[in-house]
Length: 258
Image (cartoon, rainbow, N blue to C red; front, top):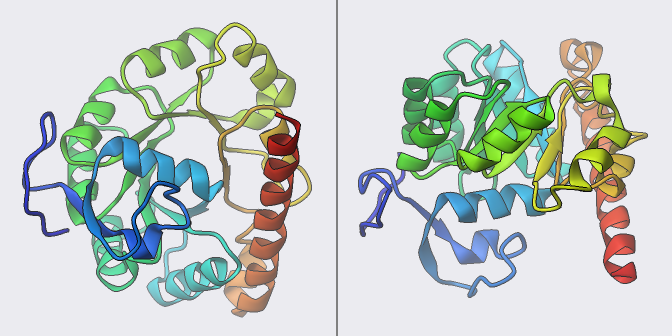
């Protein structure tokens, strides 16, 4: 768990995150280099959005999990989501946070109840991801200083998740609806912050950004089972480089047009 030194309204004073602005300056545009400050859920959400790619990790073997995550980070992926399907996931999050917390943006995935959200945030998760719309997960994450990325699918669910305070709405399963669905949602609700998970590949990640996604959630496209079983970390790093480059290039193009 992160140490802390100050209290902020609506957040448990024992669970505020501290971060070095020097470490995260590239993802926090207004950061002052060399300073340390308290991170709010909104700050954590900004880090996730600026990272652009969230790697969804479901690897059971801890040594392979660590190696795979290191390869993705070497390839430019900063946000690592450890799902609750990983054995001892909370402990894994804590271990990774203690060793890599100043360099990796570690989150918890497949969270479906407030207690797990709190435990994950206490262990070091900077953001909590749920596949379903559970308001209690949002409150549990926020009370303990973490951002909430909440799953939704229908327009009503997406709207309600935002109204309940979700920092990012995870549209899942995104491949069922497709990119045109994002454009349709954003037409009447342009304030939405949407992240697709399910169906994001090395070939279409940029297209999701063009469709309006603030970031993309990627699992099997980055972490193929044979690469993991064979220890082919170079392939994972190369794929991470392709993916992050594609997202960055599309963002630059969109920024130039605006």
